[in-house]
Image (cartoon, rainbow, N blue to C red):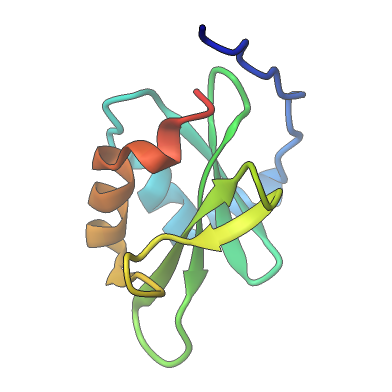
Length: 110
């Protein structure tokens, strides 16, 4: 028996953040499961499914380089959690976006 999908309220996005080059880069990336909206928030970037508003992933910049820690929304913990099988997954931006696009854990709420 499938459980009903949760509905998420539409998030309001800060238009000022659209001048951020990283936000623009992420929003230009073609995710096969649908477009995402990006919000720069609390020292990182939160990605939301554009159609449903559901959280998809969070990218937290790694200090001192061009890599990002990739997090997913944990239903059990009700917070962003690490995705790596042995701890944190820290990747360059393009690799992080490909990782998000191809792993099911990011899209379970969609």
